[in-house]
Length: 261
Ligand code: 13P
Figure 1 (cartoon, protein in one colour):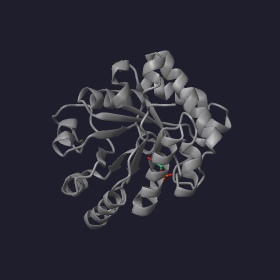
Figure 2 (tube, protein in one colour; figure 1 turned 90 degrees about the vertical axis):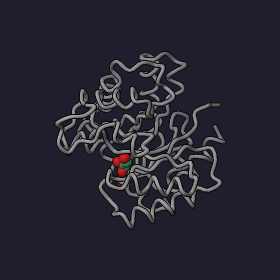
Figure 3 (cartoon, protein in one colour; figure 1 turned 45 degrees about the vertical axis):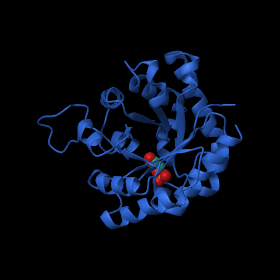
Figure 4 (cartoon, helix red, strand yellow; figure 1 turned 135 degrees about the vertical axis):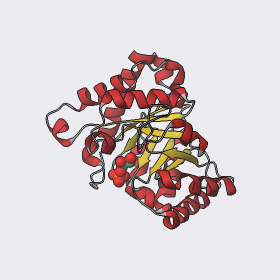
């Protein structure tokens, strides 16, 4: 029996516009009315945070507002960056740190991810540390070493006391946007390794409070089998989160999985 409340996030990435994002936010909030037992969040692009926040607020929705990235600096001459004060000002409650596209497309390093995550947690928000190996790393049998390094470095100087506001997203890069979902067994193995590492870093009690969620081609038909695994506490959804009905179905699968654990 676990006390961990599942978490499902919809990472919209660089998709939607003001109209389609608004429609999606309305579809998600309406679809999740009456769905208990799962914490949910949407991560729209920065320009639409306020628009989506207004929709969530008007509907009294419990769907949380998330941001896809943050600067670790407070303010100043950092053209194009967005600070945590700005994100909080726009109602953001949870932030993704070190998403694979930021690491592998935009060149973000473990140390930068750590500074960003520390800033998120120090600002009192929930932080989602994203980790996961590439196909080459997996083929070489290095998946455990890679994810352990990303978790260990990502969590440097972060105290166990933040366990309730920390989420780790295991998103194998080879599964993101490819249609190749990890098997439930692959996901459980990776999540269990991460939880064992967390126990060494934070102690077993705190490690048991951290949610570890799966991301990578999550779809409604496979979600229940993945969420049934003991160390999988929900998911981070990309493509399928752009369809309100699919995202809602995945959230419902997470809520149902919690009742069985
Ligand atoms: P897909 O669900 O499109 O594979 O994306 C996963 C992801 O990167 C979520 O952050």
